[in-house]
Image (cartoon, rainbow, N blue to C red; front, side, top):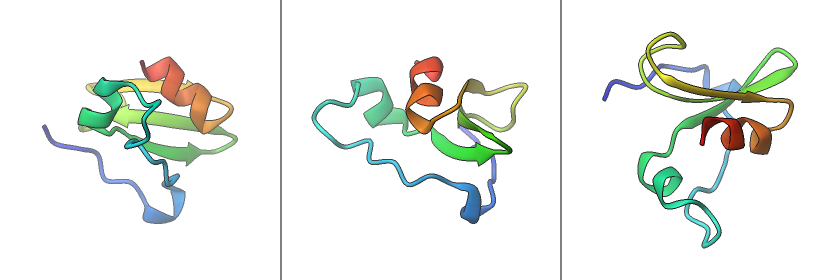
Length: 66
């Protein structure tokens, strides 16, 4: 799958390998990044064709993505 290109300065470093992390997240490892005053969690080529989660924190965006 083609993954969107995000400015590296906006990407949130998130460890998907922890024991508590959902298996799907561990396998797919979507990108989590800052978007204005919100966070996005995205897997895919763009916002329209990808799987997107949003939230006011990285954890909320990941939860919405799931």
